[in-house]
Figure 1 (tube, rainbow, N blue to C red):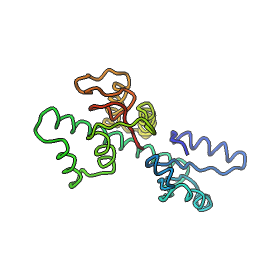
Figure 2 (figure 1 turned 120 degrees about the horizontal axis):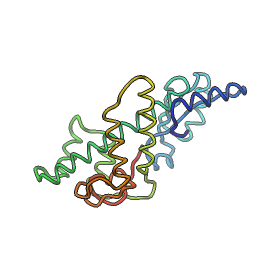
Figure 3 (figure 1 turned 180 degrees about the horizontal axis):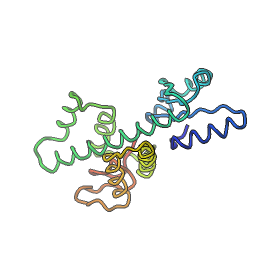
Length: 210
């Protein structure tokens, strides 16, 4: 149920099959509270029959259980999920930085209005409204920058194996690496913590929920 490269999931499946064991990859998404409440989203890569056998057990942990395809498909979906989350957090951080620096619009008005249009998203309503906007970055249950860099690396590697160049994902990864190394301008960071991606605009540590 870890977030791993698609190639590793397939390698483990082959090793399991050689020993007469069935295998499924089933990474999870949503918040730490969702894990406590048993309302995780679980994306499963497995043969259909195995998926049906596993579904009742996975239902103890998740409210959304999706059969994504063969082994490796669950891992692929989770990597794309985390890639999109990371890119969206960066976009929101930049929008917030523009609002604060230019004074053209009140940051709260900006984010509240975005929730009413096509830019609305789970990331906006959670990472944006609950963390970036109020400059509230709890450390408990936080998803460190090093983790999202790892997941972006896996996502980019998957794309490269298919002959694709993900320019935006690569840029997001580079920004996260600069932030983690403390090399992004302090003027941009406004006091951000290099171990949490939501500090890209301001604040102490943040919570990156995948």
